[in-house]
Image (tube, rainbow, N blue to C red):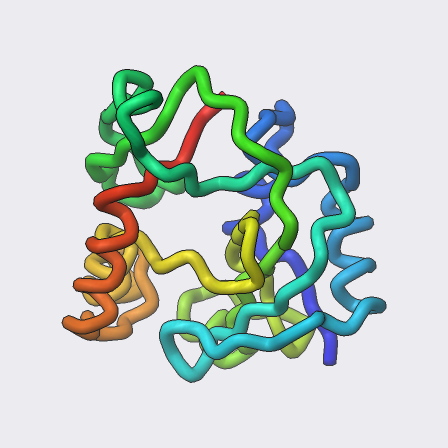
Amino acid sequence: MSIVLTPFARPRLFPAEPRRNTIQDCTAEQFVQRLNEEPPLAVLDGYAPFCKLHVHRNWTSTRCMAIPIDDSNRHLLRSGYDARSREELPVLVRWFEGIDPPVANYLIPILYDREQMAKEGTPIDADWGIVGCLYTMTPEETPLAPITMMRNALGVEEGGSGVPIDREAYRRSVAFWDVHANWKA
């Protein structure tokens, strides 16, 4: 099995100007090499048959991405419109500023198979393409954000995958993200 980093994920996980809320202590090439050489602790099914998540112990100082919202940090929540790429339309998102999250226990790369990557207009020369990575305390998937589920349902032309909304998965996502938020440095 072979894994590559997709052009979509590279600037999000390894931006040209490093940020504290991205993968730390290794280059994109070192990250991909490690994923190709080290078997995952577990392989989780993703939100669709073409999506898998590989659970790895965090070997970096990368910090958790989802932080529980409580009375001590609620005042640090911010919101605004953001797009993941220049091609996508901005959507309303929220995040923490001024938070110092703990170092994650796990890195969980999100992989799409070769066929899905081609369908989305990004052919790859590998079995799997990295489209994202979760930084978590537990070896479990963080639910897709509700807006990501909606974007996926809109189709490839709007930056999604073309997977219809699963209403129960959407409700679980809302329950999680209602009490958690990402953070920005």
